[in-house]
Length: 214
Ligand code: GAR
Image 1 (cartoon, rainbow, N blue to C red):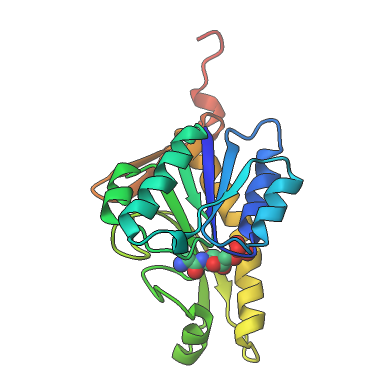
Image 2: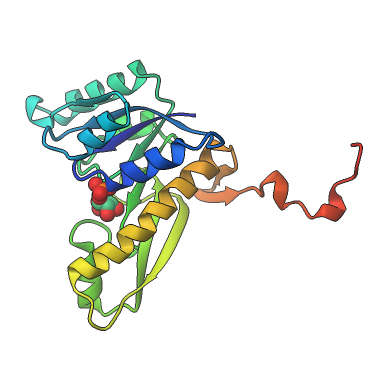
């Protein structure tokens, strides 16, 4: 599956996806990385991995529609069939989201539907939750909403700061995103009534059900 990755900054989730895609048996390939921010560190990560990377600066566009149209065209020109948003901090128009419906996922650093939006870790600490985590979900017009593909739970420690908690969640994100992308690229993810159903891998079939010679 040919994937376009959207970023706005550091690009550590991009790096985890690049590492995963480097394995010969991984069923996805990153064909383009696009950042709305010219200063995004993730652009260097893409370039170092030999992946075509480009900037589409939202500041060059008067309205969201034309930015999103340009983004969509760039993804299509690169041959992307699927989008992974990885720290892409722009709200997309309904038109873009509908065009890529069920072909775009996002990673968010909380156990959605809790703590949508910004300053997630500070808000989790403020709320006193004992467990937080990360979510990979299909993108829908409402921010940080959409069918959940996979989640990772992360404990909150008594002496956590926003920074220590963010670092622990990020470590989980780096495992979760490649796992979710693998499930999707293997064709094991279906959306039924806006919920994700994951089919078992062929190897999950109990050995007694595999009839030799069939
Ligand atoms: C990640 O923690 C990601 O979950 C978050 O931005 C960070 C990007 O880091 N995304 C969101 O908050 C989206 N709502 P990265 O650039 O190092 O991957």
